[in-house]
Length: 281
Image (tube, rainbow, N blue to C red):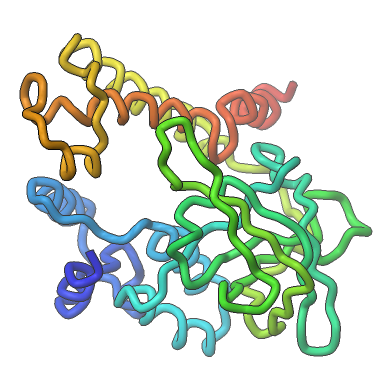
């Protein structure tokens, strides 16, 4: 996986969606489509998109020049793996209710709190977190975007065991973690206007399409989906698969995408945004 990303990076293709000045390709939408289609035809896999699609764009949009020069090349070359620290025990779709605090002390923030459902945190080198830096303003304000080295003293990770026995998500704890002020990528001081409802519409339709496609595949393969073997199961399984070998991952994929209408702001929350922004309710 890492070798493939670094091979792409040598060609300038590992972060094709980024602006050219930060390592992107400057391709047209059609070129991006062709590249993605060709990549999906071969058994190659890139890194999780936490670095390339989530924190990278925040850094090149809001970060200072020092942050851009240090972090962006390392993301593009897979030198650093990232995970996302947004959700907390009482802050999922209502992300503004997050409780993780960061208190300024000289040239550091002291971070205390907990993040949950943190995907692949056990492998990540860094975690980007939303933390509350000003508790005296409305809850949608006073939130900062911190970049935290997971090797910093006080950071600990505990796996959450899922029903499929896969340790994919985790709890991440911060106990008096000292984070240099220089790694604050963005601080929310005030809000202007209202949220664009287009993102809410896209979230709803995107999750519905993913779930409908997964259900269609499950219906199509019928009883052949019953063994429900994951890709790692297939690699260590001694018996021949039941039916075509490609159907073994259909059931796990179906159950996995049930989550997409919940994470990133549940569809019910997205409908509230649409009702407020478009209908004025």
